[in-house]
Image 1: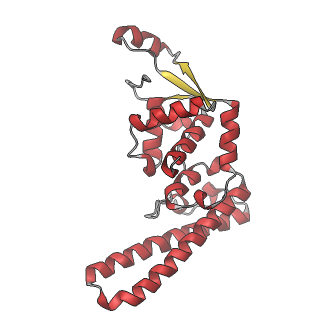
Image 2: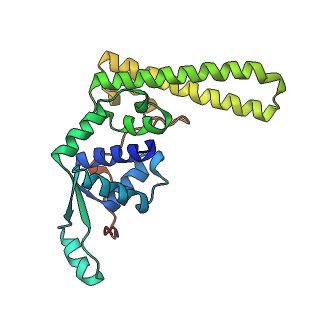
Image 3: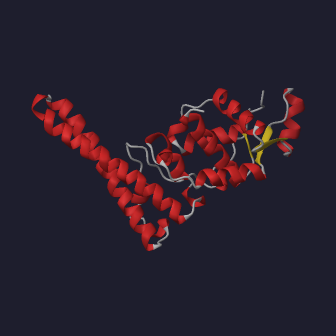
Length: 227
C-alpha cells in the first residue's frame, strides 16, 4: 500500500468514526478539510471504500432517508450507500492513531494526523508534534547550510525563493513550539490559541482540525451511488 492511499484510508476511518456517511459527503469532507485530499476523485475514493469493506472495517448500508426513498424511483438510480465503521474498523483506527513513528509526521501524513488530534491521546500528540519539530529543525539546518554555501552563486530571485522556503519552515517550527508548550501545560488548544495562531496553515503542510459532523450541511442534490 502506498503512503498516499494509506493516509486516505486513515482519514476515511477517522471521519466515519464520527458518524456514518455516504460517499459524496465523505469526499466533500476530505476535499474541504484537508488540502492533501483535494486532488482525490470518486475514482480514488470508492476503491478505497471497497477495500475497507473487504477488510471488514466498514459496512455498506442503503440510504434510508426520506429524500433517498423519494429520489431513487424518480431518477432510476439506486439509493445512496451509507458507510459505517465496524467494531474491527474502530479498533484498527485506534491502532493507527497510536502510531508515533516517522509516518506520523512526514509532510504527506502530518496534516491528516493533526486533523484527528481531538481523538488522539495527549502522550501520542506530544510524540508526533516533537517528531515533526525535530524533522523540520533538521531540514532548516540543512537549508541554512546550503544557502551559506551557494549564496554568492545565486541570482536575487533564486535567493529570495530559498529565503521564503526557510521562513515557511521557521513559521511552522514556531507554531509547533506553541502547540508543544500548550500540551505540556495541559491547556486546551482553543483557549490557548492566540488570534487563531494554533490553527494556521503552513507551507510545510500543517492544518487545523476537521470540522465536526454538524458544521457542514449536506448538499441538496448529491449523486453518489456506488458502482
